Amino acid sequence: MNHRDERFISFMKKEIAIFLDREVSRQEGIFFSVTNVVPNQSGERAEVFISVYPEKYSAEITKSLKMYEGATRAHLAGMLKRRKIPFLVFVLDTEQAARVRLEKLLENSENK
Image 1 (cartoon, rainbow, N blue to C red):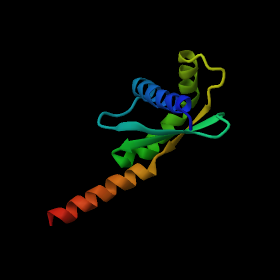
Image 2: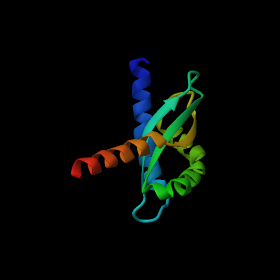
Image 3: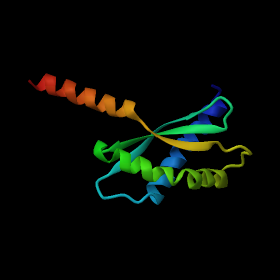
Image 4: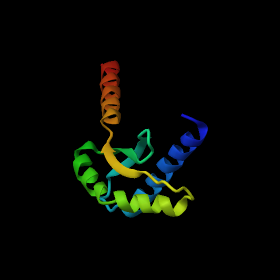
């Protein structure tokens, strides 16, 4: 991946996180973050990986984020001078949750 593509992905990750934080309504105490943005080879579609804390609300947040896919893409289009803005698909980041679980298990085993 070239430097230009890396900068674009980093920009998208940051702007998507800011936009969603501002626009998506959620209960107090529920947090989500954009962990990664992975475009396909053609650049027409990008998967936006989201982690949700606490995990028990992940299905609810993922479902509500699906309604913001188009609005998020429109927000990015308004900020960029690019011709092609990829279609965004929000995906729950299960790897992040697995890492957190593993860290907790390791922490518990060290404390015993």
